[in-house]
Length: 270
Ligand code: DGL
Picture 1 (cartoon, rainbow, N blue to C red):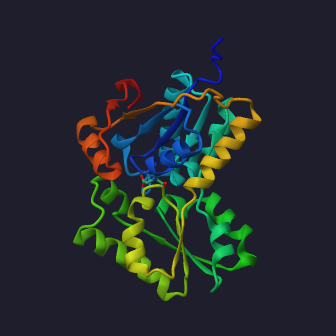
Picture 2: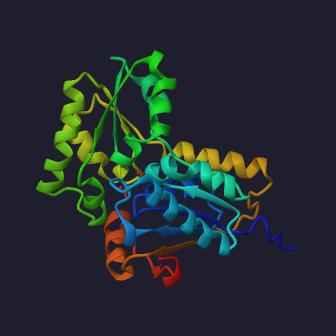
């Protein structure tokens, strides 16, 4: 007999395509789970917007996902997690997994005791991030850099152009000049720029991405709640956007190297 609960999909959302860096880890860890991914491209970027605006979008996308029957939601966006995770957990009755910059693992890896966090203004200016840094202040020094234009580079699939190199160089060099030997990717778009960041920072600098840890946490929570899909069949991933599906499909193809289908989010949720 089919168990309706365990075959329900998992909802994932981000302001755009960045959360696909997290989806890759989820697919690796939980291959039999089906996913519904929403890229809120019509409202991108979240980083410079107010916490209230981002929280409202997070509630709206979550309501859409709930209507699709998801059994858990992954907020694959540091900015939306900072703005909305508490209110989402208060209003939703299913597990909600968020993502935050990997300050703790970075401090554990750092030899200089200085870690640099690359993230959006929204994340860096949030109360949640301030608390995270305070919590770990005894383990070392945390310095930060907002990264202007990085999200848009990824959304255009522009990962190795002269403009990409110029935009990536400045914040990375500023962090290295202040002694950082470990860089935290505090935005889910940034893993797509890892090879450029590495090229600028040099191979001695450690780059920390929390995508894998989120997939592990999701697996743990689903297991705890008895929500894991125990079937051996391969899960499907459905993509939706509040932006333009045709242009997005091309960018996703250049980011992931494979053709995908992406559908419009129904107008009432855009
Ligand atoms: N990918 C998002 C994050 O992790 C937000 C990027 C944006 O829209 O500014 O913060």
